[in-house]
Image (cartoon, rainbow, N blue to C red):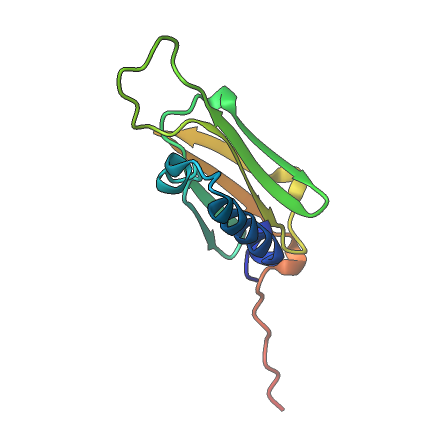
Length: 143
């Protein structure tokens, strides 16, 4: 089963975003910083074991309370917000803001028993498979 983000399943959104960027560029209303600065979007690895899907999301510098995980309408969504520190910044190189990543949950996962832990700036999610989804060995009958 291949895990896909919502954006990968809806490439049309990327086309509309590109169209908006091109129109803004042609109209001269583009903030050059927006072009040069990367979006706050953490890297997320998705792995699979016999019993579960494992997601590891790099989220350094976030408080556990600022990270949210939910499952709704067949999507597992990870969202968070990195807030700016109080005071006037003399120099700011870190990215701040809100982000959200959504993944379509494969069929036959046990959404009631998803586990999440946050350790050393990494969010670890374990999405258990149901018995139906697990690979099983089939005995061969010899006659």
